[in-house]
Length: 374
Image 1: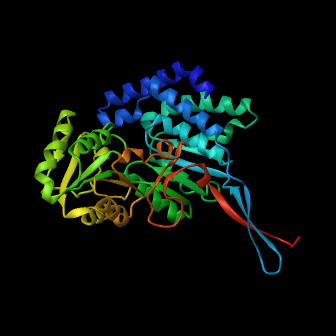
Image 2 (image 1 turned 90 degrees about the horizontal axis):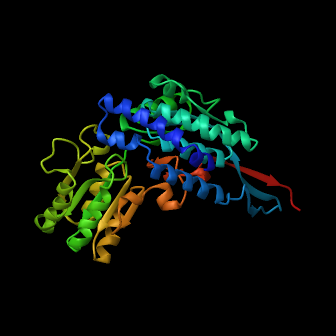
Image 3 (image 1 turned 135 degrees about the vertical axis):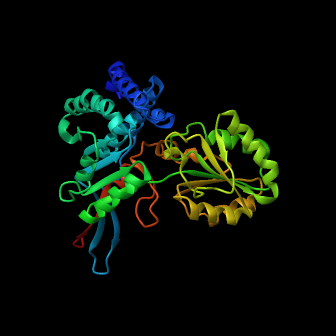
């Protein structure tokens, strides 16, 4: 964190060069927003590092039970060893992932999107490696794939003996392809493929709360937990749609109204050049809204806007996604905002294992130890 502040000018200059190249190449506004570092974002990165450094580690060993014969069963958390990460062109993720992996007592191999390679290289060479070296950790404990293109990512997910766990995040199509390659090779993949926040407006919703949630959900359009799909209870569709529309059109965001030429869960944040859209769909009450959100989207996060507690409870109980919120924005589904820790990504798998924001306690192996009776 100290080096990040001291060398901010160098980091911001490298990032500005990345942004200029991306803009000249026609990169869309949403992707440029992800790529850009500002002094404020850099300051936030430093604060998050300090929070992580001050966070106590969970115990590496705990006693589970004593067997009938007197043997003691212990559970240990042991390092993975080397953890890979493939992520989009977001320079802050370079620091987020590296710090999380190091906190989990493993080494990291990072591969970022080509547009952010200059920024990531500067962060590794000017901030991460010197900090490691100064504190007795080999600088090579965090390495960066230095070449652009898909070959580096393909190779990283195909080396299970060297890199047994890889966190993969980015566009849905690329992430799914890498997940399939990793599965074929025998690499464990924690995938953050698809996002898209859902907001359901119930008949009991307060119009002022509706406007606030629509506004909060669209403060940034290039992030996965933004408002993507707006569901409105059919009896109040004509009354609440104008409330949402006023907020969205005032921010230059278009509404995709039914009938749709795309699937309901189409993620606008990943639609280069068309990020400034929100899909709208009427539904028949809270349960239909929750089932629609679960069925039509990745299951990242959904909010119910309602004054009626029974309605909110019905929505919460019916929604099967990773995070569900009542009268607050899906933008809170983020490791730092939700858990007070930077994240390596958000896992939306519908299977046991780390789900939701993945932080360093999730990046360890469970080992059982049985000791003789005392």
